[in-house]
Amino acid sequence: MLRAKQLTVVRQGNTLLDQVSCEIASNQLVALVGHNGSGKSTLIKALAGEMASSRGSVTLDERQISDYGNKELAQQMAYLPQQLPEAAGFTVRELVMLGRYPHQKWLQKPTQLDRDKVTQALQVTQIEAFADRITATLSGGERARAWLAMCLAQDTRYLLLDEPLAALDIHYQIEVIQLIRRLVDEQGLSVVIIVHDINLAAQYADRIIALKNGQVCHNGDIASTMRPEVLRNIFNIDMQLLDHPLTGQPVAVA
Picture 1 (cartoon, rainbow, N blue to C red):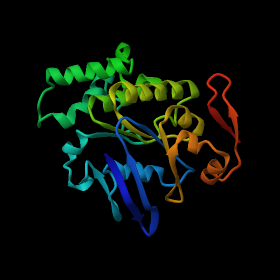
Picture 2: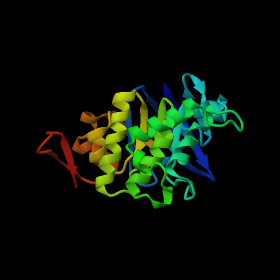
Picture 3: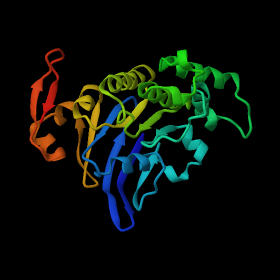
């Protein structure tokens, strides 16, 4: 279980998170939503061990995140930041192989297990066809899947994804979030994903955690989230709910 308890993050006198508590259970897709500056990226960084707390705690399996070594933690969770590192000179296969680093010894060459995990990640994300292409030549959707494949090759229980859909058009947004949903259902992963579109979150996530001014203003399943009064509290605007013509699921319209 990945858990934040009374988590507070203060930087340069600014309180970015204020006594945030939440749990990420196994085999769930959890969407983080909220307006810009609400604390979503700070929370996901803290959960990933990328940002230290000022007060409170983040624990993984009842153990403080700060007690894990870098490689040990990377064997448990993969974190994909909003600003992706430069990888222009790598082929897709080389990029995905970087995900195996936490499982390798110093200067160790890739083992057969490493190569098998990379092949599996390429297959799951359906990018085998351009495995030997330079990443700089990929489209936005292809690039998103390549980075996701790297995280899958890391072979962890948790995936923490900071706005992986932000730079994609609607076609690729659907493609990538459907893939993430399948990973949860078929491989039992636990995924936390920052999403700006509440309707995408409601369609594919199991739970929604909403942040506002650095605090949790809602934490619940889809039925409890997709209510006019709850959405107004999260986004500060009135939203109407309509039934999707095909699925019957509620769709929020401003």
